[in-house]
Length: 382
Image (tube, rainbow, N blue to C red; front, side, top):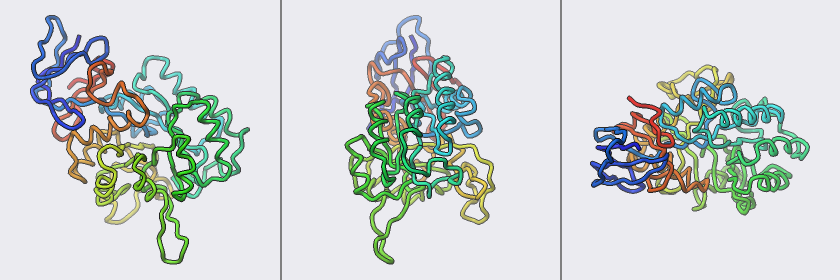
Protein backbone atom coordinates (compact mmCIF):
# COMPACT_ATOMS: atom_id res chain seq x y z
CA UNK A 1 0.00 0.00 0.00
CA UNK A 2 1.10 3.57 -0.75
CA UNK A 3 -0.11 6.53 1.29
CA UNK A 4 0.30 10.10 0.01
CA UNK A 5 -0.01 12.51 2.90
CA UNK A 6 -0.04 16.28 3.46
CA UNK A 7 -1.57 16.62 0.00
CA UNK A 8 -3.72 19.26 -1.63
CA UNK A 9 -5.96 17.00 -3.69
CA UNK A 10 -7.13 18.45 -7.00
CA UNK A 11 -10.74 17.51 -7.65
CA UNK A 12 -12.67 18.46 -10.81
CA UNK A 13 -14.04 21.67 -9.25
CA UNK A 14 -12.35 22.14 -5.85
CA UNK A 15 -9.38 21.27 -3.63
CA UNK A 16 -9.11 19.12 -0.53
CA UNK A 17 -6.33 20.46 1.67
CA UNK A 18 -4.31 18.58 4.30
CA UNK A 19 -5.48 15.32 2.76
CA UNK A 20 -4.28 11.75 2.61
CA UNK A 21 -4.74 9.41 -0.35
CA UNK A 22 -4.41 5.62 -0.05
CA UNK A 23 -3.47 3.35 -2.95
CA UNK A 24 -3.76 -0.42 -2.98
CA UNK A 25 -3.16 -2.83 -5.85
CA UNK A 26 -2.75 0.02 -8.30
CA UNK A 27 -6.06 1.71 -7.52
CA UNK A 28 -7.26 4.56 -5.33
CA UNK A 29 -8.59 2.98 -2.16
CA UNK A 30 -9.62 6.08 -0.21
CA UNK A 31 -8.85 9.76 0.26
CA UNK A 32 -9.82 12.68 2.44
CA UNK A 33 -8.81 14.77 5.45
CA UNK A 34 -9.45 12.15 8.14
CA UNK A 35 -7.78 9.08 6.71
CA UNK A 36 -5.71 6.82 8.95
CA UNK A 37 -2.54 5.48 7.33
CA UNK A 38 -2.31 1.71 7.91
CA UNK A 39 0.78 0.41 9.65
CA UNK A 40 3.43 -0.75 7.22
CA UNK A 41 2.27 1.39 4.32
CA UNK A 42 4.84 3.16 2.14
CA UNK A 43 4.42 6.89 2.79
CA UNK A 44 5.00 9.78 0.38
CA UNK A 45 4.86 13.14 2.16
CA UNK A 46 4.25 15.84 -0.47
CA UNK A 47 4.34 18.74 2.00
CA UNK A 48 1.21 20.50 0.77
CA UNK A 49 1.85 20.06 -2.96
CA UNK A 50 -1.02 19.57 -5.42
CA UNK A 51 -1.93 15.96 -6.20
CA UNK A 52 -4.02 15.63 -9.35
CA UNK A 53 -4.92 12.92 -11.83
CA UNK A 54 -2.11 11.84 -14.13
CA UNK A 55 -1.64 14.02 -17.19
CA UNK A 56 -3.08 12.53 -20.38
CA UNK A 57 -1.65 13.66 -23.73
CA UNK A 58 -3.81 12.39 -26.56
CA UNK A 59 -1.70 14.05 -29.26
CA UNK A 60 2.09 14.15 -29.31
CA UNK A 61 4.68 12.71 -31.67
CA UNK A 62 7.75 12.92 -29.47
CA UNK A 63 9.27 13.85 -26.14
CA UNK A 64 10.79 16.98 -27.69
CA UNK A 65 13.96 15.15 -28.69
CA UNK A 66 12.99 11.59 -29.71
CA UNK A 67 10.08 10.58 -31.91
CA UNK A 68 7.84 7.77 -30.71
CA UNK A 69 8.37 6.21 -34.13
CA UNK A 70 12.13 6.01 -33.41
CA UNK A 71 12.21 4.99 -29.74
CA UNK A 72 8.79 4.68 -28.08
CA UNK A 73 10.22 3.39 -24.79
CA UNK A 74 12.56 6.36 -24.43
CA UNK A 75 9.87 8.88 -25.35
CA UNK A 76 7.34 7.31 -22.98
CA UNK A 77 9.85 7.34 -20.12
CA UNK A 78 10.64 11.02 -20.61
CA UNK A 79 6.95 11.86 -20.56
CA UNK A 80 6.54 9.98 -17.27
CA UNK A 81 9.17 12.24 -15.70
CA UNK A 82 6.91 15.14 -16.64
CA UNK A 83 3.77 13.63 -15.13
CA UNK A 84 2.25 12.13 -18.29
CA UNK A 85 0.76 8.81 -17.17
CA UNK A 86 -1.32 8.26 -20.32
CA UNK A 87 -0.32 9.06 -23.87
CA UNK A 88 -1.45 8.41 -27.43
CA UNK A 89 1.59 8.65 -29.71
CA UNK A 90 0.58 10.48 -32.88
CA UNK A 91 1.39 9.08 -36.32
CA UNK A 92 1.51 11.69 -39.07
CA UNK A 93 0.19 11.63 -42.63
CA UNK A 94 3.66 12.13 -44.12
CA UNK A 95 4.17 8.35 -43.74
CA UNK A 96 3.07 5.98 -46.48
CA UNK A 97 1.11 2.82 -45.68
CA UNK A 98 4.18 0.67 -45.06
CA UNK A 99 5.69 3.28 -42.72
CA UNK A 100 2.42 3.49 -40.81
CA UNK A 101 2.43 -0.29 -40.36
CA UNK A 102 6.04 -0.34 -39.17
CA UNK A 103 5.36 2.45 -36.68
CA UNK A 104 2.24 0.75 -35.32
CA UNK A 105 4.11 -2.52 -34.83
CA UNK A 106 7.02 -0.77 -33.10
CA UNK A 107 4.72 1.02 -30.65
CA UNK A 108 2.63 -2.10 -30.04
CA UNK A 109 5.83 -4.00 -29.24
CA UNK A 110 6.86 -1.29 -26.76
CA UNK A 111 3.48 -1.55 -25.05
CA UNK A 112 3.72 -5.33 -24.80
CA UNK A 113 7.26 -5.14 -23.40
CA UNK A 114 6.05 -3.57 -20.15
CA UNK A 115 8.58 -0.76 -20.56
CA UNK A 116 6.11 1.85 -21.83
CA UNK A 117 3.06 1.37 -19.63
CA UNK A 118 1.83 4.92 -20.15
CA UNK A 119 1.20 4.30 -23.87
CA UNK A 120 -2.45 3.26 -24.14
CA UNK A 121 -3.21 3.62 -27.85
CA UNK A 122 -2.58 5.67 -30.97
CA UNK A 123 -3.60 9.04 -32.36
CA UNK A 124 -3.82 8.61 -36.13
CA UNK A 125 -3.15 12.06 -37.59
CA UNK A 126 -4.10 10.96 -41.07
CA UNK A 127 -3.96 9.52 -43.57
CA UNK A 128 -6.71 11.50 -45.33
CA UNK A 129 -6.21 15.15 -44.43
CA UNK A 130 -6.26 18.22 -46.64
CA UNK A 131 -2.88 18.33 -48.43
CA UNK A 132 -2.90 22.15 -48.33
CA UNK A 133 -2.33 22.26 -44.56
CA UNK A 134 0.29 21.12 -42.07
CA UNK A 135 4.05 20.90 -41.87
CA UNK A 136 5.99 18.74 -44.34
CA UNK A 137 2.94 18.73 -46.59
CA UNK A 138 5.15 18.37 -49.65
CA UNK A 139 5.87 14.83 -48.40
CA UNK A 140 2.20 13.80 -48.23
CA UNK A 141 1.71 10.46 -50.05
CA UNK A 142 -2.08 10.49 -49.52
CA UNK A 143 -3.08 13.27 -51.92
CA UNK A 144 -4.80 10.93 -54.38
CA UNK A 145 -8.28 9.48 -54.27
CA UNK A 146 -9.42 7.64 -51.14
CA UNK A 147 -8.80 4.00 -51.97
CA UNK A 148 -9.46 0.92 -49.85
CA UNK A 149 -6.40 -0.84 -51.23
CA UNK A 150 -4.28 2.01 -49.87
CA UNK A 151 -5.76 2.38 -46.38
CA UNK A 152 -6.93 -1.14 -45.51
CA UNK A 153 -3.66 -2.50 -44.15
CA UNK A 154 -3.12 0.64 -42.05
CA UNK A 155 -6.56 0.40 -40.47
CA UNK A 156 -6.23 -3.34 -39.98
CA UNK A 157 -2.84 -3.00 -38.31
CA UNK A 158 -3.99 -0.21 -36.02
CA UNK A 159 -7.11 -2.11 -34.97
CA UNK A 160 -8.35 -1.17 -31.53
CA UNK A 161 -5.14 0.76 -30.75
CA UNK A 162 -6.46 3.62 -32.89
CA UNK A 163 -8.26 5.71 -30.28
CA UNK A 164 -8.50 8.78 -32.57
CA UNK A 165 -8.69 8.98 -36.36
CA UNK A 166 -8.15 12.43 -37.89
CA UNK A 167 -9.98 13.31 -41.08
CA UNK A 168 -10.57 16.27 -43.37
CA UNK A 169 -14.32 15.91 -43.97
CA UNK A 170 -14.16 17.76 -47.28
CA UNK A 171 -12.08 14.98 -48.87
CA UNK A 172 -14.12 13.31 -51.59
CA UNK A 173 -14.92 9.63 -51.02
CA UNK A 174 -14.10 9.67 -47.31
CA UNK A 175 -17.27 7.90 -46.16
CA UNK A 176 -16.01 4.41 -46.97
CA UNK A 177 -12.77 4.98 -45.06
CA UNK A 178 -14.61 6.29 -41.99
CA UNK A 179 -17.04 3.38 -42.03
CA UNK A 180 -14.19 0.88 -42.32
CA UNK A 181 -12.15 2.46 -39.50
CA UNK A 182 -15.22 2.64 -37.26
CA UNK A 183 -16.00 -1.03 -37.90
CA UNK A 184 -12.47 -2.00 -36.87
CA UNK A 185 -12.74 -0.04 -33.62
CA UNK A 186 -16.25 1.12 -32.70
CA UNK A 187 -14.82 3.06 -29.72
CA UNK A 188 -12.65 5.28 -31.92
CA UNK A 189 -13.22 9.03 -31.92
CA UNK A 190 -12.92 11.03 -35.13
CA UNK A 191 -11.34 14.47 -35.25
CA UNK A 192 -11.47 17.19 -37.89
CA UNK A 193 -7.87 18.04 -38.78
CA UNK A 194 -5.81 19.88 -41.40
CA UNK A 195 -9.05 20.89 -43.00
CA UNK A 196 -11.12 23.64 -44.57
CA UNK A 197 -14.41 21.81 -44.05
CA UNK A 198 -17.68 23.64 -43.79
CA UNK A 199 -19.86 23.16 -40.70
CA UNK A 200 -22.10 21.02 -42.91
CA UNK A 201 -19.17 18.78 -43.91
CA UNK A 202 -18.32 18.26 -40.25
CA UNK A 203 -21.91 17.58 -39.23
CA UNK A 204 -22.11 14.80 -41.82
CA UNK A 205 -19.55 12.73 -39.92
CA UNK A 206 -20.81 13.37 -36.40
CA UNK A 207 -22.90 10.17 -36.36
CA UNK A 208 -19.63 8.23 -36.75
CA UNK A 209 -18.19 9.86 -33.63
CA UNK A 210 -16.58 13.09 -34.86
CA UNK A 211 -16.27 14.96 -31.55
CA UNK A 212 -12.84 16.59 -31.65
CA UNK A 213 -11.03 19.46 -33.40
CA UNK A 214 -7.32 18.78 -33.83
CA UNK A 215 -4.99 21.60 -32.70
CA UNK A 216 -7.69 24.28 -32.86
CA UNK A 217 -6.79 27.30 -35.07
CA UNK A 218 -3.69 25.52 -36.44
CA UNK A 219 -3.63 24.06 -40.00
CA UNK A 220 -7.24 25.03 -40.60
CA UNK A 221 -8.65 26.99 -43.51
CA UNK A 222 -10.82 30.05 -43.81
CA UNK A 223 -13.66 29.75 -46.29
CA UNK A 224 -15.17 32.73 -48.04
CA UNK A 225 -18.10 32.38 -50.37
CA UNK A 226 -18.23 36.06 -51.15
CA UNK A 227 -15.43 38.59 -51.79
CA UNK A 228 -14.16 40.24 -48.61
CA UNK A 229 -16.59 38.28 -46.42
CA UNK A 230 -15.47 35.65 -43.96
CA UNK A 231 -17.77 32.67 -43.44
CA UNK A 232 -17.75 29.77 -40.98
CA UNK A 233 -15.07 27.11 -41.29
CA UNK A 234 -13.53 24.47 -39.01
CA UNK A 235 -12.67 26.68 -36.05
CA UNK A 236 -16.04 28.38 -35.97
CA UNK A 237 -17.85 25.05 -36.27
CA UNK A 238 -15.88 23.61 -33.36
CA UNK A 239 -16.62 26.62 -31.18
CA UNK A 240 -20.31 26.60 -32.01
CA UNK A 241 -20.91 22.90 -31.45
CA UNK A 242 -21.35 22.23 -27.73
CA UNK A 243 -20.41 18.56 -28.13
CA UNK A 244 -17.06 19.23 -29.81
CA UNK A 245 -13.79 19.19 -27.88
CA UNK A 246 -11.05 21.58 -28.98
CA UNK A 247 -7.36 20.70 -28.71
CA UNK A 248 -5.06 23.59 -27.85
CA UNK A 249 -1.29 23.82 -28.24
CA UNK A 250 -0.36 26.39 -25.62
CA UNK A 251 3.24 27.56 -26.03
CA UNK A 252 5.13 30.15 -23.99
CA UNK A 253 4.82 33.06 -26.42
CA UNK A 254 1.36 32.26 -27.76
CA UNK A 255 2.34 31.48 -31.35
CA UNK A 256 0.22 28.39 -31.98
CA UNK A 257 -2.81 30.01 -30.38
CA UNK A 258 -2.82 33.71 -29.58
CA UNK A 259 -3.41 34.35 -25.86
CA UNK A 260 -6.55 36.35 -26.63
CA UNK A 261 -7.84 33.42 -28.68
CA UNK A 262 -7.08 31.07 -25.76
CA UNK A 263 -9.21 33.24 -23.52
CA UNK A 264 -11.95 33.39 -26.14
CA UNK A 265 -11.98 29.59 -26.46
CA UNK A 266 -12.22 29.25 -22.67
CA UNK A 267 -15.18 31.62 -22.58
CA UNK A 268 -17.04 29.81 -25.36
CA UNK A 269 -16.19 26.17 -24.69
CA UNK A 270 -16.06 26.32 -20.90
CA UNK A 271 -13.96 23.99 -18.77
CA UNK A 272 -15.40 20.72 -20.07
CA UNK A 273 -14.56 20.88 -23.79
CA UNK A 274 -10.91 22.00 -23.85
CA UNK A 275 -8.04 19.53 -24.21
CA UNK A 276 -4.44 20.64 -23.85
CA UNK A 277 -1.90 18.82 -26.02
CA UNK A 278 1.84 19.07 -26.53
CA UNK A 279 1.93 18.02 -30.21
CA UNK A 280 5.68 17.68 -29.83
CA UNK A 281 7.67 16.88 -32.95
CA UNK A 282 11.35 16.73 -33.81
CA UNK A 283 12.32 19.19 -36.52
CA UNK A 284 15.47 21.20 -37.04
CA UNK A 285 14.40 24.04 -39.28
CA UNK A 286 15.40 27.64 -38.56
CA UNK A 287 13.30 29.92 -36.41
CA UNK A 288 11.94 32.79 -38.51
CA UNK A 289 13.38 36.23 -37.94
CA UNK A 290 11.39 38.92 -36.22
CA UNK A 291 10.29 40.14 -32.83
CA UNK A 292 7.19 37.95 -32.92
CA UNK A 293 9.24 34.79 -32.39
CA UNK A 294 11.52 36.05 -29.61
CA UNK A 295 11.45 33.55 -26.76
CA UNK A 296 9.64 30.91 -28.83
CA UNK A 297 12.14 28.23 -27.87
CA UNK A 298 9.44 25.61 -27.22
CA UNK A 299 8.27 25.51 -30.87
CA UNK A 300 9.59 23.40 -33.75
CA UNK A 301 9.99 24.78 -37.25
CA UNK A 302 10.39 22.86 -40.49
CA UNK A 303 12.99 23.73 -43.14
CA UNK A 304 10.52 26.06 -44.85
CA UNK A 305 10.42 28.09 -41.63
CA UNK A 306 6.85 27.04 -40.84
CA UNK A 307 5.61 25.89 -37.45
CA UNK A 308 6.07 22.14 -37.05
CA UNK A 309 4.55 21.33 -33.68
CA UNK A 310 6.28 22.00 -30.38
CA UNK A 311 9.21 20.89 -28.25
CA UNK A 312 7.00 20.67 -25.18
CA UNK A 313 5.81 17.94 -22.84
CA UNK A 314 2.31 18.39 -21.45
CA UNK A 315 3.27 20.03 -18.16
CA UNK A 316 4.56 22.95 -20.26
CA UNK A 317 1.20 23.72 -21.91
CA UNK A 318 -0.40 23.52 -18.47
CA UNK A 319 1.92 26.22 -17.13
CA UNK A 320 1.43 28.33 -20.23
CA UNK A 321 -2.36 28.04 -20.06
CA UNK A 322 -2.28 29.32 -16.49
CA UNK A 323 -0.14 32.27 -17.57
CA UNK A 324 -2.06 33.22 -20.72
CA UNK A 325 -5.60 32.79 -19.41
CA UNK A 326 -5.49 32.88 -15.61
CA UNK A 327 -6.75 29.29 -15.43
CA UNK A 328 -6.28 27.61 -12.07
CA UNK A 329 -4.41 24.39 -11.32
CA UNK A 330 -7.80 22.78 -10.89
CA UNK A 331 -8.85 23.87 -14.36
CA UNK A 332 -5.69 22.86 -16.20
CA UNK A 333 -5.81 19.39 -14.64
CA UNK A 334 -9.28 19.18 -16.17
CA UNK A 335 -7.95 20.27 -19.58
CA UNK A 336 -4.96 17.92 -19.44
CA UNK A 337 -6.43 14.87 -17.74
CA UNK A 338 -10.16 14.76 -17.04
CA UNK A 339 -11.37 15.94 -20.44
CA UNK A 340 -9.12 13.65 -22.52
CA UNK A 341 -10.25 10.64 -20.49
CA UNK A 342 -13.89 11.66 -20.84
CA UNK A 343 -13.57 12.16 -24.60
CA UNK A 344 -12.28 8.61 -24.99
CA UNK A 345 -14.81 7.09 -22.61
CA UNK A 346 -12.18 6.06 -20.05
CA UNK A 347 -14.06 6.38 -16.77
CA UNK A 348 -11.32 4.66 -14.74
CA UNK A 349 -8.87 7.59 -14.92
CA UNK A 350 -8.75 11.37 -15.32
CA UNK A 351 -9.98 12.25 -11.84
CA UNK A 352 -9.38 11.32 -8.23
CA UNK A 353 -12.10 8.82 -7.40
CA UNK A 354 -12.29 5.64 -5.34
CA UNK A 355 -11.59 2.64 -7.54
CA UNK A 356 -9.89 4.61 -10.29
CA UNK A 357 -6.47 3.63 -11.58
CA UNK A 358 -3.88 5.32 -9.37
CA UNK A 359 -2.27 7.45 -12.05
CA UNK A 360 -1.33 10.69 -10.30
CA UNK A 361 0.79 13.78 -10.91
CA UNK A 362 2.14 15.89 -8.05
CA UNK A 363 2.96 19.51 -8.88
CA UNK A 364 3.91 22.73 -7.10
CA UNK A 365 2.04 26.01 -7.43
CA UNK A 366 3.74 26.78 -10.75
CA UNK A 367 2.85 23.36 -12.16
CA UNK A 368 6.36 21.93 -12.04
CA UNK A 369 6.16 18.16 -11.61
CA UNK A 370 7.50 16.82 -8.32
CA UNK A 371 6.32 13.20 -8.41
CA UNK A 372 4.60 10.82 -10.81
CA UNK A 373 2.60 7.78 -9.74
CA UNK A 374 1.80 5.18 -12.40
CA UNK A 375 -0.60 2.33 -11.57
CA UNK A 376 0.07 2.93 -7.90
CA UNK A 377 3.88 2.96 -8.09
CA UNK A 378 6.15 5.98 -7.73
CA UNK A 379 8.06 6.37 -11.01
CA UNK A 380 9.41 9.87 -10.40
CA UNK A 381 10.38 11.22 -7.01
CA UNK A 382 12.30 14.40 -6.25
